[in-house]
Structures are given as structure tokens and as C-alpha cells.
Length: 370
Image (cartoon, rainbow, N blue to C red; front, side, top):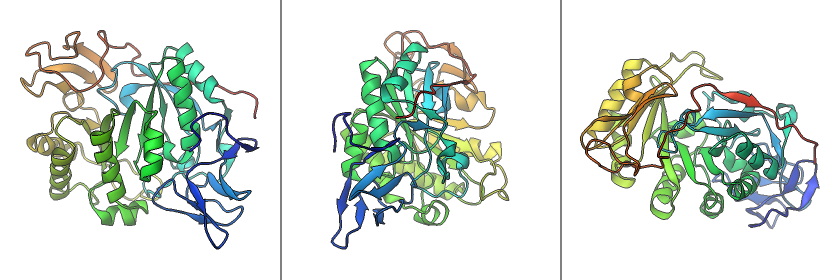
């Protein structure tokens, strides 16, 4: 890949992409994700923002964003990565999955660039995060895997400005690109959509195994802080049996310390006729996860201060109190251990928690187009 930030410009917001190969029949194969899209000149891949151009692969959303917002880090959700701090968040357009329930569908399913209102160089993004007091920069709203070149360059600039980087992703990426991408990421929340191949193929137009491979690789081969989110959808992936399989796999293959967020579905996009997830389903699934041996299990998209707080895995004392995205009592010692029994808590914690609060703050980074 191109390890630096000197990228070949093919047009406004269009740069030569990485991870591709020419095929004997004249097409270009994208090797970024497991789809391996094979494209003729001018054709877009499934994700929409990568296309065959001038004999190679092009990324057509470089420096273009669907908007910038400072969020609480807990909204990503990341509960063990500098709690209470602000994170400058942005996405682009398109996605390499086809989830029928996508709750950012106006961005991830966009097929026109009029959704992308802001131009911002990697340096501009990183400097804005530092200037606004954000602890980190998040690639989110749509999957950063598909705009990996832009995300990598933003991450490099963020590092130069003392800002951490966060990827909110489905983890649907091939091994070579995966190593290049996550080399520059400090924390990730990976969306594990379900635990059956049938769900991934029918509902997401993708496959389960590449995501499991990414999860294991992150834990075994990197220092990236990892948390996992599973959206429980009534009648699709919320059965006791599937939740038990998911939790057992996590405990066995990733270990009990990786935080798991079980979140509530709300009808959206092409699944408007599916009911919201009952709060009792989340509480039942959380009990299952804890009984399976997972240490840190959270509920999301519902009001549940018990399920959103952090507990010591040893003495079970509540050590970080949360109410939605708002922090309450803080019972960690300066070394990031339980203040009661001194058990180390997995994650990255400042001595004093952040005070960003729960309110997001949209900001504009509008600059001149390239």
C-alpha cells in the first residue's frame, strides 16, 4: 500500500486507491474486502465510493464527509476507552454491507455525493479534533473500511496532533488491508451483526466468517482496544440459543475481558414492520452473557443505568456509573483498578474521567474543495 500521505490525485476528492489488482480480462479487482468486486472502467463497487478508473482502483470520497459532530465516546459505543471524553466523529457515503435495517441508511446507502457536505483534509480534521479538546477522532456513521485511505491519513495526522483514533466498523475486510488499516487505529467497536451465516447472507448480504476472523486477529495480533456491539432484532438474532452461542464463542476465542454491548433495534430502512426490541430481551441476553463468563456486558438504546454501568469482575462493585451517556460515580483508582478490591479493569482510563457529558455538538469543517 501507499504508506505515506502523498496520494495520486485523479480529480476533486478522487485519489488512486490501494488493495487492487488487474485481471486478464481487463477488469480491476478490488481486494479491500471479501466482496472482491471485479469492475470495468468507470464501474463502482458494491460500496459505491470505490471505482475502476484510469487502469486502477480509485477512492472517490477522499476528503469528503457527510458531516462532523463531537460525541461522547460512550455513543460509539466505547465504555472502556477514556470514558467521559469527547470524540470528533464523521463518515462519508456508501457501505460494503447491505443491512436491511441500517439506521444510517441515508449515508451508508447513498448513491449521490450531495450527501457529502464538508471538504476536509486529514490535517484539518486532526487539528479540529485537537483544537476542540477531543481525546479521539472516530470514523463512524458508515464503515471506514471503504474509505480506508482517507481514514489512514486522518489517523496519521491525528497521531501527530496527540489525538487517538477510533474505528466503528463491521470488520468486513481482507487480511492484507486489515493489517494496513488497523496499524493506525487505537480503538475499535466492531459490529457483530449476528451469529449465523444465514443472517449475514439474508439480512446483510455478507458472510459471518470474515468478521470472526477480524475479531480474533484484533485480539491475538494487535494492541487495538476492542469492544463489540450486537444489535438484537426480534425474531432474527435474539433467541436464547443464538445469544448463548455468540457469548460462548466470545468467551472461548476472544476471552472474557472484551466488552460486549447488546443494543435495541428500532424499525428503520427496509425493516419498518419489525417491532422494537423489548427491554426485557436485552436484560435476558445480558444475564446470559454474564453467566457465560463475560466480564463487561452492557445494554444500549434503552434507559437502563444498571446495564450501562461498569462493574468489577471480581467483587462486582459498580465502579463506573452511567445514565445513558452521562457518567456518575467513579470508583477507579489512578492505576485503572477497582477502588474496592484493586482488580485491574481492561481498558484505557484517565486518572480523572472526562466531563464532555451526553450532548452531541455538530461542527463545520467546511473548506475549499481539492
